[in-house]
Length: 93
Image (cartoon, rainbow, N blue to C red; front, top):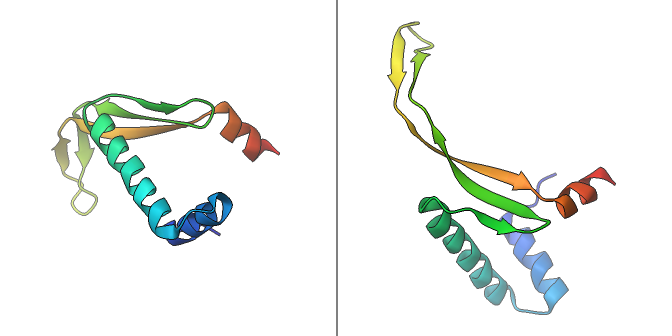
């Protein structure tokens, strides 16, 4: 079962003793920083836990699944998330 944002905010608020409104504001700010920095092409790293970075995708030829015709897919960007050592160790238990 997956934890949604509301459940995450509730859990963090309970653990920290802060209000859900405060935790929600901090979470919004964290995501805003991720968007700003990764959008600029910079890597955001939380040592031991997580790294987020923008990757480049080369232009390529694909196929239209309905017609089978070749189509050109333009170059673009994607996002890469990498788990850190502490997160990997927690999952391995």
